Amino acid sequence: MAWLVTGGAGYIGSHVVRAFQAEGLDVVVLDDLSSGHESFVPAGVPFIRANVLDGGTLSQVFQEHHVSGVVHVAGFKYAGVSVQRPLHTYEQNVTATATLLAAMNSAEIDRIVFSSSAAVYGTPRTDLVTEDTPKNPESPYGESKLIGEWLLRDQAVATGLRHTSLRYFNVVGSGDLALCDTSPHNLFPLIFAALLEGRTPRINGDDYATPDGTCVRDYIHVADLALSHVAAARRLDAGDAIEPVYNLGSGDGVSVGEIMASVRRVTGIDFVPEIGPRRAGDPDRIVASGALAARDLRWSMSHTLEQMVQSAWDSSRAFVR
Image (cartoon, rainbow, N blue to C red):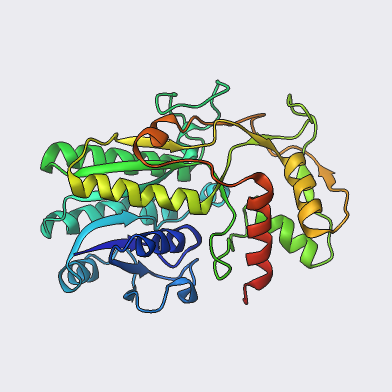
């Protein structure tokens, strides 16, 4: 029996695949390579190039590879772009999830770990976000992730589906030199691209109500996050009690200014970041409690900020585009 990882050729999904492998669990990857890389799929892991919207292919994969559970990482993950492309976002994140759940139901596959997001909270009015913090998504992307959670919830009522949703905060770093974040919108790739091209990295606003005036966010290492997916799958396989949602957060924040200082130390490149205007809607601080995930999903922050930056920098330089 194997677990299917949708989006398993992407930055996060490929780390999940390796975490499953490291624990001796069989895994299969399905990815349309719209943002992933086939080179991220380990040798020997079955790879199917397809979109989750293709229910026929899903059914075939379930049967041929004896799939017993799904880690659903695939999706359109660009919150800012989703405002300009709402229909595409809903198709890839909502319709595709419904298609996946229907195919799972037909194949009698009853367990799923869903890749959700901190974007479901929007701009929280609390210093520490918990799973019960009110949900107020501010983009089609955030809305689509919340709807994905609802789809799992409602399917569980209807069919007994066993599920959990993991709400990621700011995922950074690398657990393997061959894997890196290639998003054109995330902070670390933007900083490294600027440095490698001889440009100066930019900070959007330095007048926030934070110790150094720059936004504070919750940065977590991708390899730590991947391990929690394995722990969730094991609980589902064992029939153990599991919460419907978990925050994967540090409980402590890091400012963009502190990130820039760490990048200077790690890279040895001396620079003074350019200061631009604030981006509309950026809150001063978003930090989450990971207490529930620590209790149930082996969640821990086992990497320092310097280690997160170093691993991301090394993988960024090693990646051949």
